[in-house]
Length: 128
Image (cartoon, one colour):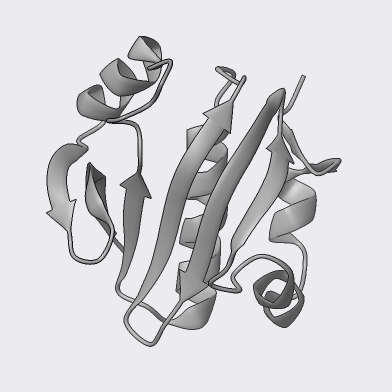
């Protein structure tokens, strides 16, 4: 079964007009969204050079939420004309660490970095 985000398929989300998607999600404020079987606390922002996808908490999941969010972010980034996606995942100091998530992040190229104003987190830049 394809992953759904707030009841919409990834394809449905990609079909939304850029302005509508940006106004709903890329608001540079923390929001909680349901992605597949996970509840995700994240913050999504578009500026003139990049998209920032910051994930603070992921409860549940495991069925491909990160690739789905990456696909949507790439699409929005291309529409916005930005050069990169900045991915920040706060998975270092969790009360109940998700070892599978940590292993997946490292396997897919995330590195532990000190992020100015945010602290230490997994970080990856994706060029567009």
